[in-house]
Length: 518
Image (cartoon, rainbow, N blue to C red; front, side, top):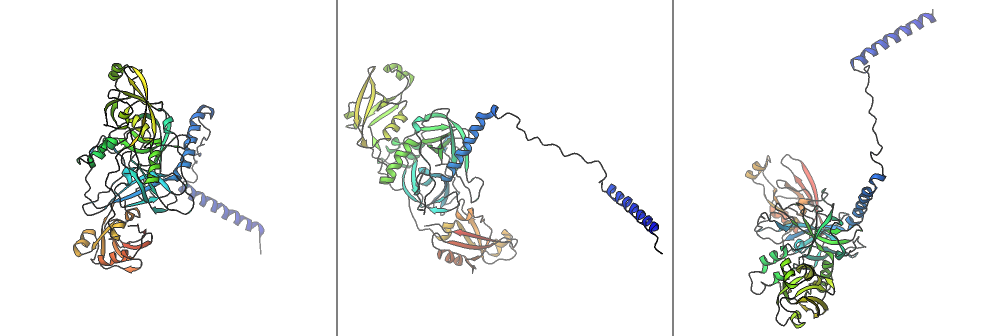
């Protein structure tokens, strides 16, 4: 007979036992211990917006500049013909790009730098030392597209070069500022795209600093030109035509940034990153940029003529010292002291004499010899300029008709040998014999193994390393190096070639590479 009271007692008993049992388990697991309160995270600003408004506004300006400028900054990869690559020793003043690979006596040398797009149709400004002597230049855009570039012209006397890519549609491009208006203490940003491989965190770098000085003459260009042409009587005077009037900045600049833009707070280009002063090859607080006014004038000639038509005034000079200023009765310690004149040259014809001090060009003051060179270089051969000179304590104005400097007698520095396809990709392969298999770690010999990958090459950018066995190329099995070469020779420039690779542990990798142009 069903007893409701007895049933309720059983339910209560079972419930109590279950509770006590569960409490014991919870105690063993530590669930009954007092829990620590989650700390309260304070999200209120430690300082008022008003107290840091100036810094916050500047920070926001940097963000806005970076967003506008970086899409027009490109990475440039250059390939130089096979040559013996010497190791660079420490140099107190040196170009900080390109970033060169090891190369060798029979292998091409890959290097890199930066550049920036200056027109919607694909003209790009960079440094001469990034692209000179190359047989292939590849440009990488922010959207990860890459294009083979043509060298429109390159000027070793200013370290300025113009290259071009042919692209459908309009490209993001930068506007030019006035480097003449740049002042010491002014904020600037140095932008570069050093790359060092696809998807690298160094694809873009933006650093901020101030203009530390104007008119720095480092003798970098003269030294580079003297090494190339100083021993030939026909060209030994050419280094003297180098123009060095660098803007100095403390914005951080490191290898690979050569050719990138230095911009002002309006996002306008005021200089081209070109060099650093260093004992290590890396940034130590001194960066230098080519004034954009000079670079723009060079660019115009390179685009129009393929070379620079440099105006010539026909004087040898040196920067005025305090002793010179006192001796000649100058109003200030500035100007360029004329040492010698080119016989029957423009300056001599206009009445300039040795011992004159040139203090202005077209009434724009000249503080030092490099600035005089730059002011003259901003004109064209045939232009007339007015020189202000001090002679016998008096200022005179003399009109000079500029001649053309004989700088275009340089032999072409770009050669174009027909490289093999594997060299274009930057790899070297050999048969995987028993000895190599043991050394690398393969259990069995046979097939083809990659023995060398050029630094900066297409292969390295896609993560290919030495020690991988080539199983297939475009779906075809590879049994010896000739198979590899034949497969790659069948691929046209611009086409994508597919590799199936195998590591010593049997792991397989798929790598698809775009074949560069010759």
